[in-house]
Length: 335
Image 1 (cartoon, rainbow, N blue to C red):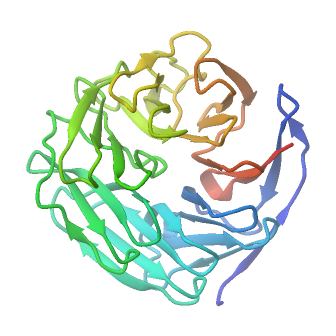
Image 2: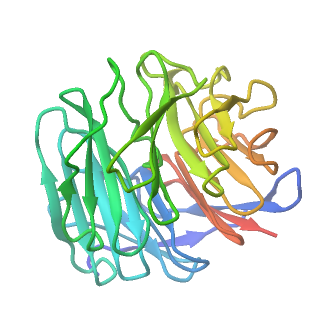
Image 3: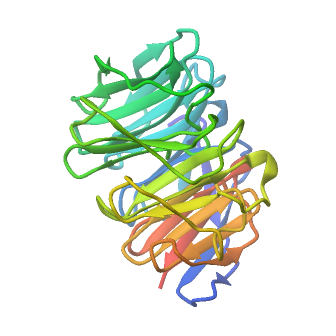
C-alpha cells in the first residue's frame, strides 16, 4: 500500500462520569485531513474517510493505516460503509457525487457511481445487509434524490419514485448519518433547512414513503444532522445549527414509535449543536464542535462527557471511535 501513514495511539485516560467510558486520544503523525465518514465493523476492524480523498482503516483496533484513493485528492468523502477488513465503499459529497469500492483492503478502488448533475449533493448512505443499501442526495427538481444497490455497492440505480420536499429542505452531510437502515426493509432519512425538520420513513426499501414532522429547529442551517435507532421503534435525532453551536434549543429529540412522533429534549439534553449520534445496547453518545455528551436512558437525559470537539462517532458493545478535523481521532473503550 503506497503512501501509508502509521498512526500511534496515545492514552490520555479520560474517564466519564459513569466510570464506564474511557476515551483514548489517537495521535496522527503528519496527517491533516478531516474525517466525517466513520464505520465500525467489529471490535478490531474500523474504517474512516475524509477530505483530500483520504481513507483510513484499522484491523487490530490499535494501529491505523491511511492513504489517498488515486485521482481523488480533490474529493471530500463524507460517508463510508464497510463489510469487513477487505471490502468498503466511500461516498463523496459536494457538487456531484462519486462512489468508490474496494475489495482488497484499499489496495485498489473501483469507481462504481458517478453523478455530476446540477443540484446533486449526496448526504449519506446505509445498508440493510451485505448486498442491499441506499444513499440519498439533496433534492433535485423538488424531490429527494435516492439511489439503491442490490449487489453490495457494485452498481447503483435511482428509485423510480422520489419523495417531494419543502422549500429549502435538504439533508446534511455532517457525518453521513442522516440515513438509517434497520431490519430487512425499514429506512429513515432526516432533513432540515425548511420551516420544519422532518423524517422520511419507508418500510419497503424506498418503494413508498411517509413523512413525519419533528420538533427540531427549522429554518436555514437548522435541522436534523444525525439520527440513530436502538431498534425499529426507539431512536434519537440530534442537530441544531453548526453556526450556533452553543444553542441547545431544538437540538435533540427521541421517538418510541418508530419515528412517527418525536419528543423534544429541552432539559438536560446535549450541550448544543451535535453532528453525530451513535448507540449500543446501553448507551448513546453524541458529538459536535463543542463537546461530547452521553445518555444511558435512550436519550431522555444526557450528561457531559468531554469538551473535545469531534465530527463523527460509532459504538458497539465494547469499543467505539471518534473522528474530527485535521486528523483528530480517539478510541472509546466501554468497561
